[in-house]
Amino acid sequence: MTMTLKNIAEALNLVVRTGEDLLERTVTGGYAGDLLSDVLAHARKGSVWITLQTHTNIAAVASAKELCGIIVVNGRTPEETTLRKAVEEHIPIMVSPLSTYDVVCRLCELGVKNREGV
Amino acid sequence: MKEYKADLHIHTCLSPCADLEMSPRKIVSEAKRKGVQVIGICDHNSAENVPAVEINAAREGITVIGGMEVTSKEEVHILALFGSEESLFSFQEIVHENLHGINDEKLYGEQVIVNEEDEVLGFSNKLLIGATDITIERLVDLIHEHDGLAIAAHVDREGFGIIGQLGFIPEGLPLDALELADPSKRDRIPRGIRLPFITSSDAHKLEDVGRRSTTFLMKTVTTAEIRRCLSGVEGRRMRI
Image 1 (cartoon, rainbow over the protein chains, first blue to last red):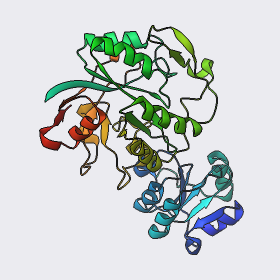
Image 2 (image 1 turned 90 degrees about the vertical axis):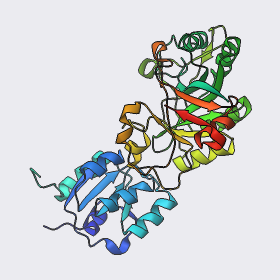
Image 3 (image 1 turned 30 degrees about the horizontal axis):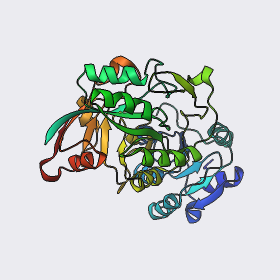
Image 4 (image 1 turned 90 degrees about the horizontal axis):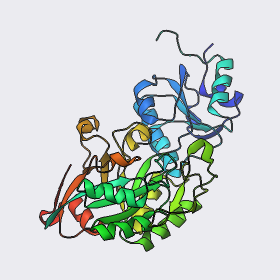
C-alpha cells in the first residue's frame, strides 16, 4: 500500500506547520537522526525524516536530500526562520508530541519501512 | 608588533569532564612551562574560575582571555571570549538563565569553583554539560552585544561541532573564526568558507595545555586586537 504524508499526519495526529498542500507526497521510507551531517550522508531520497532539530538548516538538508518531509519530535517548536525556509524549499514540517522512538514505532506499524538491502 | 602564542580553549576543574588537577595555579604553571603567553579559559557554560586563573597568570606575565564554551540549543559548541570580567559575567547571567537542570556529580563529574590558591570555594550545581535554549544565531549576537569573540569550537569534530550538528555553517552567521581541533584535518572543512581558522588544545587535562596553539602577530593582547588579527587589519597576522 502506498503511504502518503497525509496518511501519516492523520494517523499520528501531527501538527502540520508547513507544506499543507504537499501532503500527497508518497513516503518511500524513513530516517531518524539529529546530527545533520549524518542525515546528509545517509538519508535516502523520498524518506520522511524524524528529528528533534529545529534549526533552519533542517529545511536545507531535507531539500538537498530530496526528503519528502520532516517530523519534529517531542513537541519542539521550529524557529520562524526554519518555517520560512521550509516554505521556500517546499518541505512539509510536521510536529509530534511523541519521542523519536515512538514516532518510528508508529510509522513502522503503518507499514513505512525502508526497502531491505538498499 | 609582537608575536603571542595563544591557547584560547582551556578547561578548568569547573568543567565536569575536566580533570580535578586543572586548577588555576597548575594551568598557569603548565602554560608558562610550554611558553604559552595567552590563555583562554573556556569552561562549559560557566566562567566562575576565570578570576582565580587571572590572578595567577598576572604573576607570571601571562594574559588570560576569560570566556566560556557555550552549548547552543542545537548542541553546537561556541567559544565566547570577552575583554572584561564585567562583560563575561553579564553574559554568563544570560547563559545561566537559559541553562536548565541540576548536575549529578556521580554521573557527570564534579564542578569545582576554586580561588587563586587552588582552594575549593564551592561547587556549581548547574547542569553545565547541558544545552542552553539559545539558538546559535541568537548566541552569536549575544556574544557580539557583549563585545566578545564568537568562535565555533572544534569544527572538524562531529560531536558538538557546527558542521557535524548542522550539516554546514548557516549562511550569514557572523562567526569571528573557526577552531580546528586538529589542523591537519583542515581539508575536511568544505571549501568556500571565508572565515579565519585558529587551533587550540581544548585541554581537559594538564598535559594538554598548550598542546595546540595559534600565534598572533599584534600590538597588545586584547580581544579587540585578536579581532583585528583575525581579519588581518594593518599587517596583523596569525598562524596555526
